[in-house]
Length: 51
Image 1 (cartoon, rainbow, N blue to C red):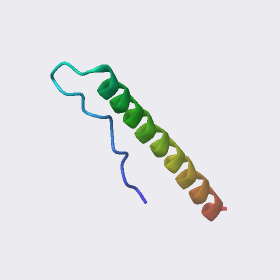
Image 2 (image 1 turned 90 degrees about the vertical axis):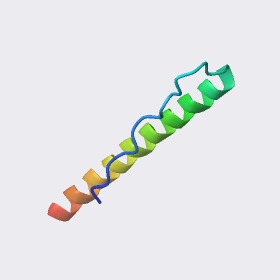
Image 3 (image 1 turned 135 degrees about the horizontal axis):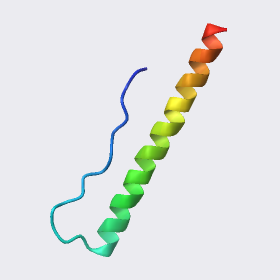
Image 4 (image 1 turned 120 degrees about the vertical axis):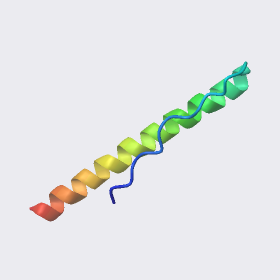
């Protein structure tokens, strides 16, 4: 229930081609969105249980 978010995607320390950069960015945004939605759902559930 109190699991932390995955965090940001690690960017390699080398030249990153455009497609790989796009994929890394998409993964990063996906992780953030999932985490925000999950934390919002947790907060709503806790509020409902407390009432």
